[in-house]
Image 1 (cartoon, one colour):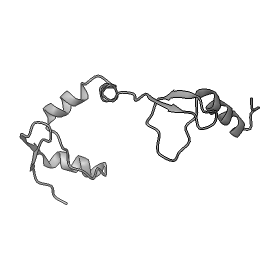
Image 2: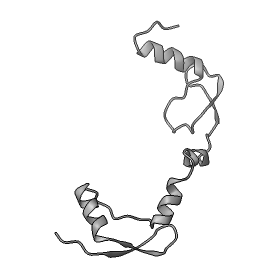
Image 3: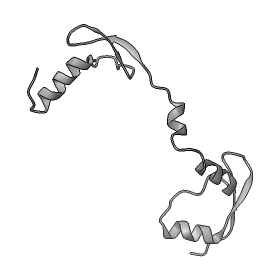
Length: 105
C-alpha cells in the first residue's frame, strides 16, 4: 500500500498539521489503528505535564453513610450505589478476613 501525506486537525489547538507518508507507514508497521489527534507541539506539551495531573483534578469523594452490618455512622471514600451494602472499616475488615479463609473476629 502506498501512503500519501494527509492533512489533519489538532483536537487541542485546532491547527492543521501534516501526517506524512512515512509516519503513516510507521503506524501501519506497528498496527496502530487510529490517526494522530494532536500536532507535534500539543503532543509534546501534553507529554511534558507532570504525572498525576489528571488524578489530582479528580477529588476524592467522602460520603457519610450508615454501616449495613452494625448501623454505625461511617465515612466512605466513594458514593454508595443504591441497593448495595456499605460497611464501616471494622465490619469491612471482618467480612474481608472471613471471606479469605482467615480467622473472623
